Image (cartoon, rainbow, N blue to C red; front, side, top):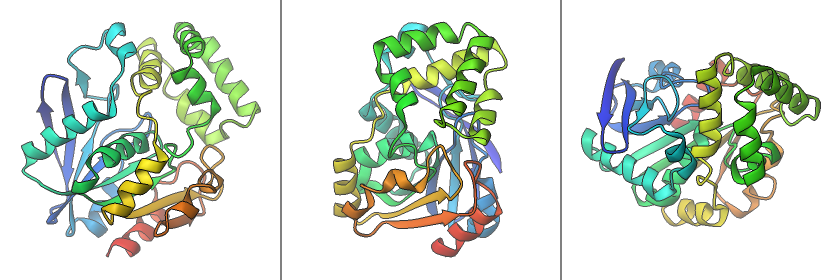
Amino acid sequence: MTEHYFENDLVKLHYYKFGGGPQTMLCFHGFGMHGKQFRLLENTLGQKYTFYGFDLFFHKETKLRDESLTTIKKGITKKELAALITDFCRHIKTERFSVIAYSMGTHYATAVTEELGNLIDEYIVAAPSSLNPGALVAYFSKSVAGNKLLEKLVLSEKALINMLNIAKWLRLIDGPGRQILYNEISTAQLRFNFYACFTYLRFLETDKAKLIRTLTDNKIRSIFIFGKRDRMYPPSIGRNFFPKLKHAEVVLLDANHEMINGEFISKLSGLLL
């Protein structure tokens, strides 16, 4: 595995490259994770794919050129994200690619697929919050009042922890999900990043009709992976979506929200090889 940067006017994008196969796979990690999250796939799929794992916005080494509050509140559109990915693909000299994503990263992968479906071979999403991010995410990211409240909460570690506890009590998130989020608010910088992710990415909202049309018209293989015990993004969030997408492959793991593990690798590798 090697580390690299790709730079343009928007961002200094840090990424990892692993595997050495002829096909390109772009990797979008979950909240609080990093570009190495899918490295476990290298042993089984590294001869088929070359993986590019990004540190996503407000994570690890990736930095926007302008990370001011004004820029964060302005947000990024799907077309702007697609333009970044197009520039990156030109940089690595690839014309086609697949995408794999987990939880928060599925919003990136889905937006890219909606905009660049003619370039994509496979669309693989685990714990796909992009299908239904939930009431809490919608309130804090899309509602003016909710976003203002979140802005105030990030100034107080105690208030944000109380919010997570209430969300768990209301069953909006599960225990592992709460722990993942808790680990990401321990410092003022991390709390700011938490706010920035909610706010900057708010326009990456899935247009389900367009996604279905894109996957179908471009004959993109689509694999949706759920944890049977994932209370944050359970299989039921796809109940109304999957009947409209005739060729979707749905995988159920014996897992909670933290599912990028041995079973995930085994099941997915079995499908792709």
